[in-house]
Amino acid sequence: MNVKKFRHVEKTWDEFWAEYWRIRLVREDETVAWKNQQVVEFCVQVLGIRPGMRVLDLGCGAGFQALLFSERGITVHGLDISPPLVRCAKSEAKKRSLAATFSVGDMRDFKVDEPFDRVLVLGMSFGFGTEEENDVTLNCLYRATKHGGKILLTGQHPYSASTHTGPEWVETEEGFLIHHGTFDPLTCRLGGMWELVRPDGTVVTEGENPESDGIRCYSAPELRRLLAHAGFTRPHFYGSWLLPPGDLQWFSTEMITIAERPGGKPRARAR
Image (cartoon, rainbow, N blue to C red; front, top):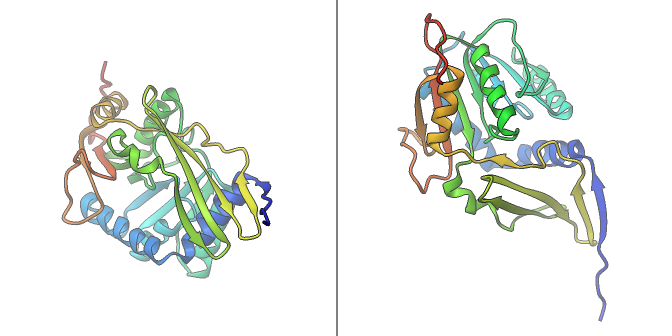
């Protein structure tokens, strides 16, 4: 009996996660393209985004959603920690003659020259830092938002974390992309890793990952307190991208949070 021998190959995080997963596979996936349209339409309607408004897209990835905003006449700037993703976003904007701009940066420590009408953290990207870093992120968001402006955060809430602990897999032209997920109930952090198993027995894994500690899964009450401490008001929680919008439920697979920076009033931090 022939026993297949597996050969492990480690790629850098940018090579595996950014260039392969976030650019190549996402670009080829019609379901993801449809989801991006759905997310943008939700943001436009629920946040009241209009042409001419300035929108900051934090953790923008390869810019797929930011470019859709730009097509609607919205002035959008995207920021992401991965240089390959930002290069891809800039290239697509130039190719499609869109005015969207992009830069490399970390949402846990960034500054803007002029605050934005709306600030977005899409793709379940809020919560990848430590508790202290996530606090700093919200403070950065506050400073980046105009008085009377709004933010939208997407994160993973603990009630549905079990749906991501897998293992789960996706069949691609190059083999099976397998995800091994973990959830720590004591820290409420959802982690995991991806690997690509090719037909010839090659197993491609990601190397050092800046998000290796996983994502902090905040409950709605926890997030409400964090937002209030940062100075935001009127938080509201939704459970999906479907329109008309529906409130967060225990079985919701998404947690979409909207909050406001008070208009023209002195900042009053919660104690």
